[in-house]
Amino acid sequence: MLNKLVSPIGAILLILCIGIATSYIMAEKTIEQKVNNAPTAELFATTLPDENGKPQALSQWKGKIIVLNFWATWCPPCREEMPELSALNTAYQDKNVIVIGIALDEIGLIKEFNTENNMSYPLLAAEETGGQLAFDLGNDKSALPYTVIIKPDGTIANTYFGRISKALLEETLIKLL
Image (tube, rainbow, N blue to C red; front, side, top):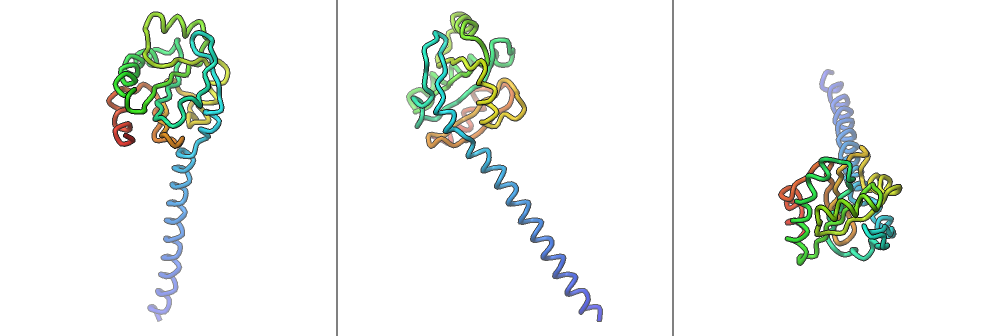
């Protein structure tokens, strides 16, 4: 009698466990797909002014590995990481890699910063639209700095909240080259 009762209960528990595990796995894949399929199409449809006010279409870098760094002149960790980003850009410029800085700042402040620091990569102004661009690319914390590595096919390889280093970025870049 006990075997007849345990068998149906065991089967129900097994089915329940399989259902929970499947739901968990599917939820993880959905989260991963959301990050990997972030709307880079909107990013590439965007044009932002550089430090001199000249419009720059982000689509000009489509097909490259992009290290996209959201920053601001008033952000100490942003300023600290920028020399390493500049060194990374110089080291990888012949390997289809570009670093792009999108500042949530005014053009004049960006120009002043770059005059003093001479970054080797494009610095663009996104005073009012930068926060939304960063959010669309996974920055749900509104953190600065925020860095996104975009593959040549336009999907996101990795994202980083806070200060990063050249060595940390190279861990992802090496896998993409």
